[in-house]
Image 1 (spheres, helix red, strand yellow):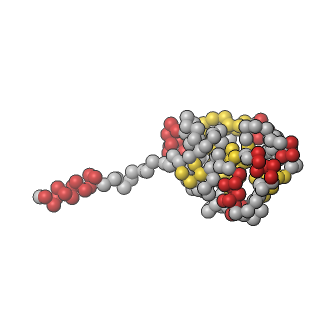
Image 2: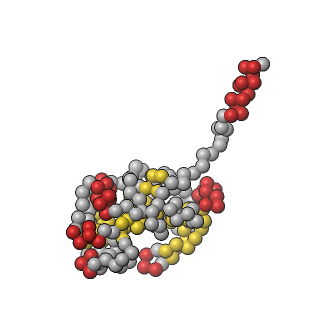
Image 3: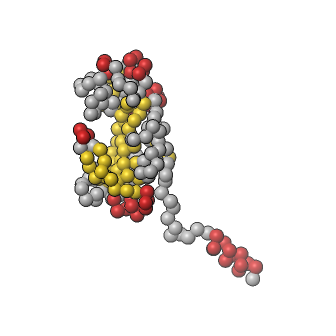
Length: 202
């Protein structure tokens, strides 16, 4: 009888095999988590519930597009998700932005990381586009460093730098390319303001 009661107690205490673990709310981003290439608007809303909200998001050159935001009320956990078409049939990638810091990271880099920290993670200097225009501050060439390699499963990463104060004239403008160890850039000390993860095409 005692053995039977013990066995019953263990069954009751054990988590059900079909129980779904809660989705991550912070930590490292991979090509499969917290968003995967096969995700759709529907699957993300099923998984994240009220923490997944459809919104109009800012694109390049003032354009808007329909996307999905995870954790819209928590800026340090916010993730913007774009889809391959207007029907939100498949995720094309995600973006971290709109926050001073983020609980998410990619290869040890997060929103708010310094220029020096990114160069250290890359293992060598890299090139950044000139600031003060629509595509300013993006890394354009990792120069063969560690961050030039795609993530496992083929996702690629884009990183953008910026700062509230305006950039010096020598660091500004379309067509300008600046090395990350440039003395003027180092002194201006921009930080990571945006990180994108782009899913591979199927």
